[in-house]
Image (cartoon, rainbow, N blue to C red; front, side):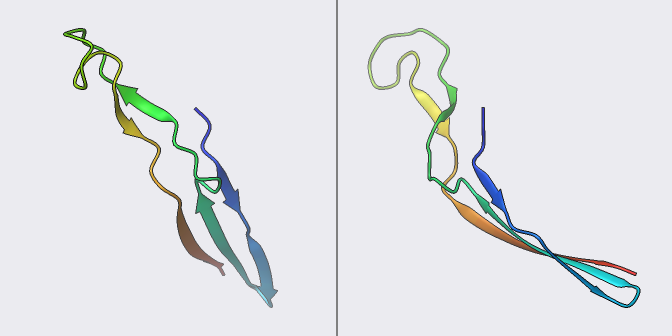
Length: 69
């Protein structure tokens, strides 16, 4: 399974302090592949075999700061 992630880090240096500011965007293209499915065979109705039980979550963003001194 391939997760669609974009990361944009920005590296800054001030004397002996190094800072990395990052922005991550997960599921950037808003795909929805099936992560798991019902593997038990009972019938072929709505609650039956091979019905997806979870998909990739919607897109979300994460901000981060790392300080090295």
